[in-house]
Image (cartoon, helix red, strand yellow):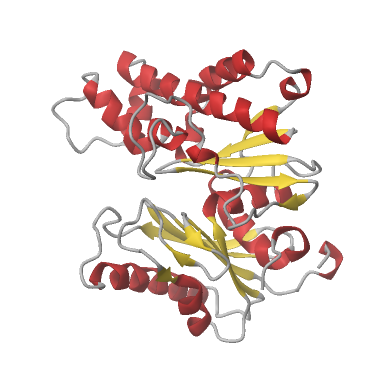
Length: 326
């Protein structure tokens, strides 16, 4: 489906992460007409007899119902969803590493039952960021784009030759599990030294605590770590440098492999600006030595926190480029 033949109805777009559940109505031009979000309920609590899984589902169902009701119940073109991985794709039985309550949860089947007759398309949340940035953001007009999310987890999605690359299992572009430090910390995936194990928000907080940051405040968060870094706290600044260096190394490897033009970074950590991007650029330039790799532009996601929602909508609204499954 080309842009000239886009449906004239909005898409219900959803972004499911370990910190928040977000939803929006997105029009065929990629504009967010209305949006809402809630905290992900007890994302770190493993499932107990299905209770945690159902509580999470009911929270999501309530969020979607309120958003559409407040907008007057408009007719929809479909439902597009970005969710943390891994997942069995395209059936979208999801098992987000950062949401233990959902293991093999039949998200697509549940949403199809909730919105009968509508296309329901679900992909990795970072893949949706890549699609959103390519469709309407920092990657617009380029053919080869990597979208990266650095938040509760770290993920990525690839656009090559102007089209989303799925890979054999729908997980192409998963830059969060590029190894940046073979002797580094263990990762939730079972490996060691992955980008996600080093740079995701909770990992940075844990590392900073080991270095003496806020020893009397066990509830301190990544948001507070970033705020302290802006104020010049030396441990917090070192944590941001640690994250930026790891992302830069991963991007250098990915650029050499994929011959990128643009890498767009989204997620909460990307909002820290130069605290992250300065060490990122330094590490990238150190490791990306080939001429073609040095040409890549590394930029913040132009769509900000809505990139994943716009990309989820693109699974329906621009399916010729961003959706190739049934």
